[in-house]
Length: 488
Image (cartoon, rainbow, N blue to C red; front, side, top):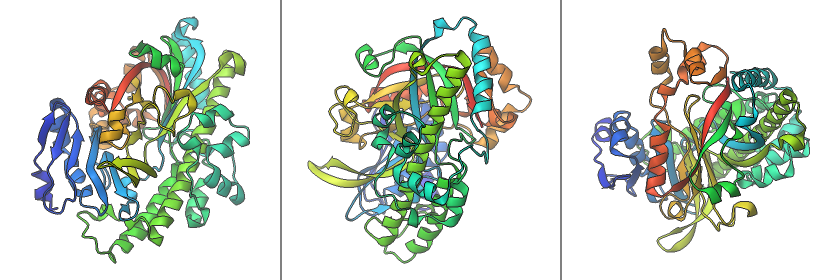
C-alpha cells in the first residue's frame, strides 16, 4: 500500500465507538478501530490507520486487523494494534510485539488508606525520594543482582517463578500474574551473546522513558462487587509498576528484525511495509523468534516481580511497618507487548491462533480457564495506567472482548505528542512544579524525562477508557489517583 493510499484510507462508522476499514487491495481482512469522533482526527493525522490496513495484508490473519482506543503510529504495527494469525498458516512478526518485549503493568494494593497518612504531602514526598534511592532507574541503569550466564538462562526459562524462588516475592504473586509469570517454549539457545550481555545486570531495574512506579489511591469505585473481588476499596493506597525486559528484550527484537527482514525476502509474501518483516509461525525462523521472544517475556516478568519486592521493602522501611501489617499484595500483572498461542472462536470454530498484542492488554471474561481462581467468577483485571499527572483505571474483561478483539483491550492513554514535540512544548516550563501544585511528587533523572512524559504528551485517559467501556470490550471497576511517581 503506497503512502498516498494509506493517507486516503476510508473509515466507515459502525457506531459511536467502532470504525471499519473496508477490505481493499491486498487486505485479507477488514480493519477495525475503536475510537470516537473526538479522537478520530488525531488518529488519521498520524497515519496509524494505514498501519492497521497493512497488518491486514499479512498471511493467515483472521477476522480483523484491530486497533485499540489508545492507538498511535508504531513500528510496523500501530501501538495499540492487535492481530491474530492462524497457527498453521499464519505468520509471526516482531513488529507486532515491539522492541520492549513484555513491557507490562502490575497493580498492588496495601492495607494503608490515604486518610491514615497524617502529613500526606510530606510523607509522599519522603516516600518517593526513598524509593528513588532504593530502586535503580534510568537509561542503562544497573541493578544489584548480577547474573551468571547459567542464572540468566534460568530466568529466561522460569520468569517470575525464578524471582520468587530466589526470595523476591511470594507464591500468591505468581498466581496473580498473566501466564503465571512464565511463557512456555522459551529457549535460551536462540539468544545472542550481545543480548545476554545486556541482560546480565539489568534485572530489578525500572529503566527510562514511560516506565514508572506510581503510588496512588483508589478514589472512585464503579463496580463494588468486582472491586471487592480484586481487593480494592475507596481510599486504599495502591502501587502501579510499569516496566519491561529492558535492554535484553530490545536486543532480542533488534536481532530478529534483522534476521527476519532478510528472511522475508525469500518468502512468497508481498509485504506492504518492510517493518512488517515476518516468518511463518511453523517455520524454523518463526519458531526461533517465538522461543527468543518467550525468553524476553520471562525476563520482563522476573523484572517486575523484583521491582515489586523492592517496592515492598521501600514501603516497609519508610513507614516502619512489617510485611503482614503492610500486606502489599499483587492484584494482577498484565503484558502489553507480546505474541502468544491462544484458542479463540472464529466463525463458530475453535482455532489455535498466534495473538499479537502491541501496546494492548489481555482482557479475558468471567469463567475463562486461564484466570486465577480468585477472579474466575468476575473476570480478569485490566490495568490501564494514565500519565503521571492524571488518573489510572482498573477495568475487567468481558465476553464481548472475546467475541470481537480476541480478548484484548487498550493498555494506556497513548501518546498524543512525540517525545521531541513534548520537549518543545515543555520549553520554559517547570513540569515538576506544575505536578507538585496538583499534589503529585515526582523523582526522575533530569528535566528531559519529565518534559517527554508530561500530561499533555498523552491522550485523555478518561476518553480512552470510556471508549473501551462503552464499546463493551472492558468494564470500568475503579479509578486510581496518583500521589507520587518515580521515573527514569
